[in-house]
Image 1: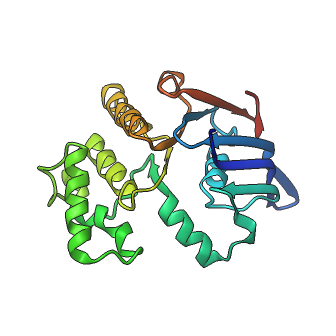
Image 2: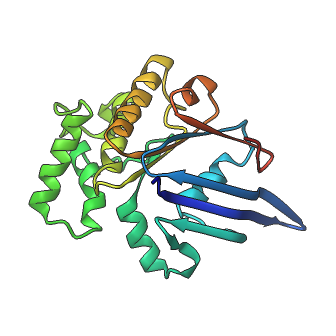
Length: 224
């Protein structure tokens, strides 16, 4: 029987800006099962990134409930939430978010340090992951020595460092040309076939077409 790995129940997220209250997400109820490949699509300013932060347990709801692998994140301490998020979720961002002074290998090793993985194991796993994404020949390169597509591959390898069940990709093709973007989404598709749950935010219908299910958001509300 399918098991929900992320669940939002009647979630609202509001922000106060001066005298105004911005309703970034309104009454969202979403269930994502283990092993799904889901795209979240909507125009700029629709609430996609806010929804992504809620799905990734990076932010708490103003009201409603968020469950990560059965855990109500509101009931967890900051440290407990950080640990479970670090083990369960790998993040991929549009701007790559690599540390410019670290090599590709060191960038991928970094998340494992926070999970107290021994140095030798970190180095071996990071090398294996970079080979898996086709960058076995770029281990010692700094981010500014890599192309945009190569930097996103490093970011994906880093997201896989702690072997999470979920990969959350926020506009992973946004800074890439069309051909490279399709290669990156194909890489995510391959990870999904290996059992990873993929949640991908995009504003591009063609990219969303790679997913098996699409969630549409507009003006903070789930349309479909």
